[in-house]
Image (cartoon, rainbow, N blue to C red):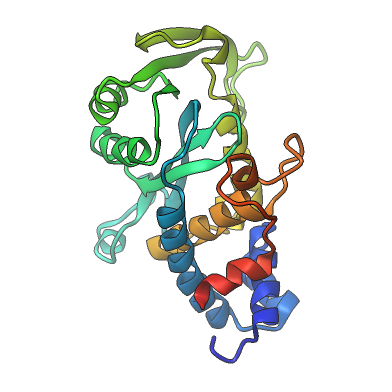
Length: 274
């Protein structure tokens, strides 16, 4: 990796954040697969540290939270004792919190989908905000108590529960269930019902699936190790927050949130290694 120039590193990162696999990036840039993976791990650590340090004292007013499924090594149903002995394998849920106005990803976390993870994640989200917010999650029961404890009651909290119906054409493999209604449930405080939604965070999750090859469904491009999975997410979120211009905002989420005054480039991400 030390033999790569910053220009070549930027080419590698640009390919990865646009949804190319490690092998495809190797073919496109001429860098070896091992070199790309080493760069990804080191840069991912630098990106995680930068996001943790920078995304503090945020003046968000409305925050949306959701989880997105993926897996590491193998899907949970296919995990064998031999695979489990090698380390973390199976379902990996990415928890994401987004500012509904600036579209800034405030915090993210990869772990199991349970109340303990929700508590750790929500404690982190609350610690990054400077004032009372309106918070919306899905209807998962793991959220309520951690929300109240993390925000010490200083939150207007609501859940949006989607009601699914059956497909009139019958069940088809991989076809999603039909959402027939959305119920808005006030859980704490006095949230504005017009802003009870998880649409923005769900749209960001789609961007994530399209921007990282390892998240693409029904392919053989999945993370083999948890550290590679987390590193790819860290690089993606720096790119999403600081480099990628949001089509509606006409600026990056970080600029809209007042975190930075300038538009970053991929070269700026690479400079985090300095």
